[in-house]
Length: 147
Image (cartoon, rainbow, N blue to C red; front, side, top):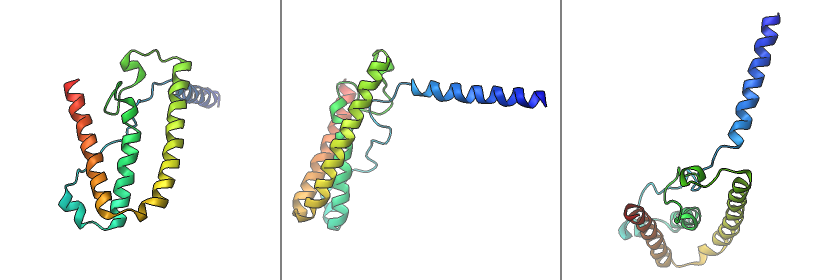
């Protein structure tokens, strides 16, 4: 019986320690969810329905909002404050968290606007914008190669 209590206490202690240790872990500056699985050409986009184009357009906006503000630090996920030499202090973590929250709020407002207004846009304008956004993402990859 004593052995079970000691084992349970030790287990709870280790789980609690691991939980608190993860809070102080450095977060990636660019979300791990950011990335384009496929780039499209004009012919492909011309064959898509307007609804598909709207979702693709919105997906590209999300990627750019979660990447562009941070290109002075990184262009790909996985880079943390620690890997950049930024002290992983409580203040720095809070500042980064505040930035993520502000970006999420901006993105939510922007996407609500886009979902309401984009259906009124011309298909050709949507296609041009998607190609522009994808070219911008390609340029980010080139930027990281030269850096």
